[in-house]
Amino acid sequence: MNTIQACIFDLDGVIVDTAVYHYKAWKRLANELGFDITEHQNEQLKGVSRMASLDLILGWGGLTKTQTEKEELATRKNAWYVDMINKMTPAEILPGAKEFVELCTQAGIKTALGSASKNSVTILKRVGIDHLFDVVIDGNKVSKAKPDPEVFLKGAQELGVAPQNCVVFEDAIAGVEAAINGGMHSVGIGLPDILGKADMVVSGLDQMNLEKLKELGALNPLKGELALGQNRSK
Ligand code: G6P
Ligand code: MG
Image 1 (cartoon, rainbow, N blue to C red):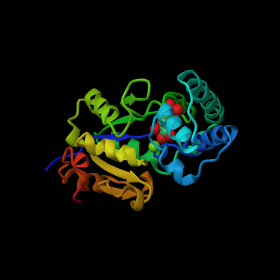
Image 2: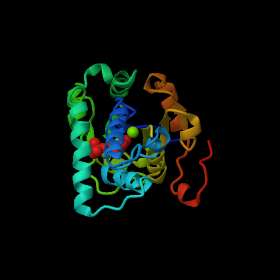
Image 3: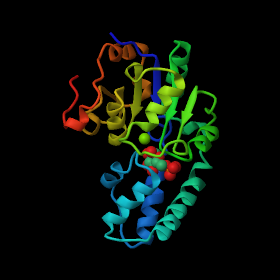
């Protein structure tokens, strides 16, 4: 039986509710370019890096841009996004998130942040929880986007914990896939319809407790199942 020694948390949509700001900023950019994006399309942007998100959006709008133009567009979107996150307050920490990270620490379970966002540290400081994590791996420290497991494997490595003893908390399909690809346990934060590949799906970290971590520890995370196109056995 495996035991859980580390919890690795995605940021956007798991710890704080920034997904809505990303959506607003991308929507504004798309609108300026002459088209719109839907909430359903936004679901596919969750957990996806800034440039990869832009490529998807341009594809939806049927637009082709040069690398220089893309960099300008991504910078424009990020400026609007940063304007919004600079106004964030601790009230925007999602229910139970701070308490659960603290509970892990008290129980001797290590904690890491594993996010594609290059704005991670700004956000953590803004909402006053930058001291809470043992390790922070963000978009400035990785080169491969989820579903590549790089961000989570780096977190596990810096914590000194084997992947099979880690649980990843994710609101994005690509993030759950990254956890599976890294041979880690996963908890989906959101709807089972969308995050069904995760070992367990809960509506928020306020629904997590040490008992559930124990249950996860009893599962055997199998590496590479996703590559074979199979769902994980529960
Ligand atoms: C997270 C979000 C994505 C975002 C990405 C990069 O994974 O879920 O929506 O595109 O981070 O964020 P950044 O702040 O670097 O643009
Ligand atoms: Mg997320």
